[in-house]
Amino acid sequence: MDLTPKLRKVALEKGADFYGVADLALERDFIRDQGGEEVASYPLGISLGIRIMDSIVDQLPHRQERAVAVNYQHHGYEVINRRLDLLASRLSSLIQKEGYRALPIPASERYDDERICAVLSHKLAAHLAGHGWIGKSCLLITPKAGPRVRWITILTDAPLTVTESPMNEHCGDCTECVDICPISAFTGVPFKEDEPRETRYDASKCEKYLLEDSEWGICGLCVYICPHGRK
Image 1 (cartoon, rainbow, N blue to C red):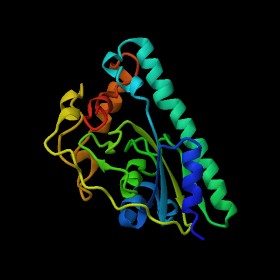
Image 2: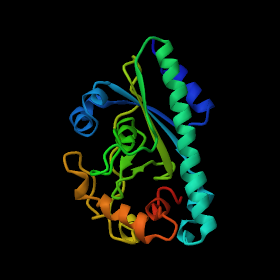
Image 3: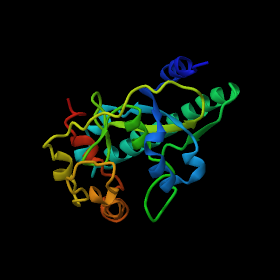
Image 4: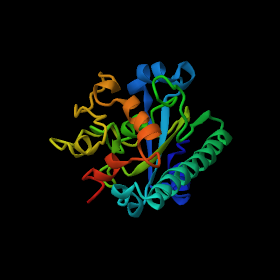
């Protein structure tokens, strides 16, 4: 039995703005290299997203003000991540009750400090599920909300219907995220599946800025500036 309609209904009723199913076989080698054999053993990934409120993101140019920084960190990050984790746990339990495996990957938990990455790229799963494309900021860009979305993934072997195919890149000549970055962490090179992240993005620069140089430990200007989110 295809559980896709049931899971989608529950996800949307419980607060998800985006629901999709990705065929992870398309990037099996990459997933194995990042997360290991167990993570790569799951054929499908359910990609769930919750949109960050525009009223919070639009204040980010004033992130040096403590009230703006606190609100973004709390409601734009921590609260949404908790909502995603709870939603993924609920859906995973439903899948397990139907007799299939389900492994929810935390919304925002680092797995590898050296590479500065999680056990699975939620952006990659969202891309494979057809939610959007990987932009020059290395963020997942959606047509409806740009990069103003937090993501989570449930790995599963349940017989679900893959929702969409990966979306083509629509950044074109735009370099607004590259230009606004305060520490020039982006090279402006468009995403290519066969090229490492370092070709486009220096994650260590970004982390150093957040830990040592930004006043309240947040930035988010690449989330703010993207024209696809500022429509």
